[in-house]
Image (cartoon, rainbow, N blue to C red; front, top):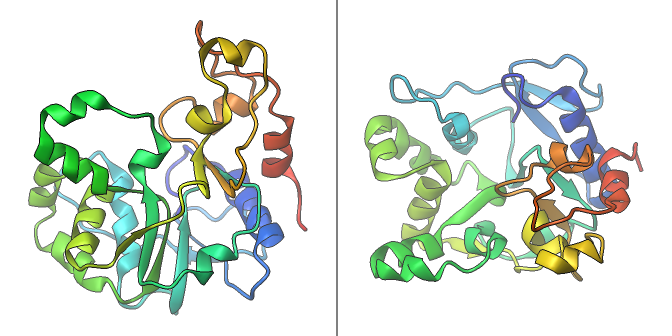
Length: 252
């Protein structure tokens, strides 16, 4: 999904190229957007679905829930949702091979441990369950009741949950269908690829064994890293040519 001006058409086109390189099975690559200018003509472009959010809502990530509709663009079957700001580096066919109705990244798998969270055990248990919606697979049309639940009271949903992935995870968990990708498949660039602290000054970032998708949870963002930024006094980000090649390569 692409809306507004934060992500240009290059994000969609590069993601399309990454999927084309790394997904062998027949598929549709669909982009729901409010601006199709500059997109590769091979991309299946569809209008951005409307979503009635609470009045004055500024967190537009809730729009992701709109793809849970029962009928949208003729989609059917297993559907893999991908955020625009991620990089595919290896085969993603296995994402379609796992048996189950719903798979998502475990959010905690992208971050380092947070021991202070245990001060509030119930909150800790909830956050340990939450998925990160950068990459999730669902059976199209089978989760429309979750969208209906949100639409019944968007204001209350925003009061109870910080963002859409908490709401989504909670509802799928209560349905008994929440499953997580193997932790090594979707990894954080900052926490899994960049060597920690002083080690980063002596070694360049590299993907860990088994990684298929690089996710930019938190900061730095992908655009910063590819532009040579994201440095901290305690953390160097060295050569990332491997990441740049994976992101910017054209076609198969």
